[in-house]
Amino acid sequence: MCFSAQASFTAAAVLGVVGAATFAQKPAPRRIAFAAFPFLFALHQTIEGFVWLSIADGGPPQWLTALYLFFAQVFWPVFTPLSVLLMEEDWRRRIGLWILLAAGVVVSVTLAAVLVQNDYSVSVVEGSLQYATGHHFEDRLIGLYLLAVAAPLILSRYRYVMAFGAVVLAGSALTQLAFYYAAASVWCFFAAIGSVFVFLHVRRRARLRQIAG
Image 1: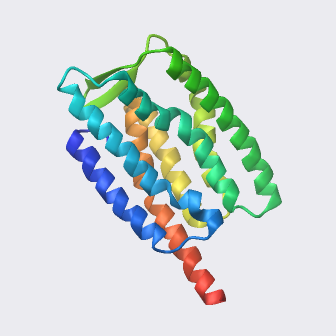
Image 2: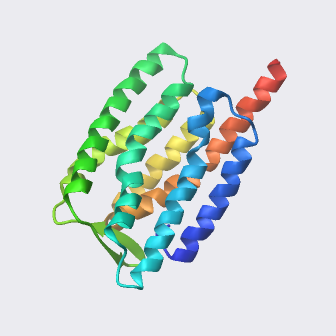
């Protein structure tokens, strides 16, 4: 998380519990990817916890920085629309989700190339971690990035998935307005908070399945 190693590890522990509770609901196979969000955010926060710890020792190694940024910039733009697409049955929404997945692939491939070709520095700026490189090409993709990670959730017909998307979108807007200098770190904090709606969605679908069956 964006404030300290302790905060990151605490967030990871809480998200791990949420993830365990989510999978305890025995999600249907097509919802397993979506149900994995809390566990994946827990892993992401754990990685940033180790980034924080390495700051005091002269800075994290490039592989650790790259691992964190892989999740933040490369993984989420593809995984988010794909996880919603796997759940969706309405063909009209599926068309939109395929388009958003294609946008996510463009973002992920581009940012993966940036990540491979450049070294990132990590520094503490106003209590948050700033990940920076020599150029800011990735900043030009911010609109397409937000489209890939927020729009699929909001496009869903499920209310808790839409609520998750609303948190992601609001968190992204707040990050750009107030924490632009540490966007990769702070945005993931808000998205991680929103993943509690993943548990609520999976639990609701499990209860409806029990009633129907």
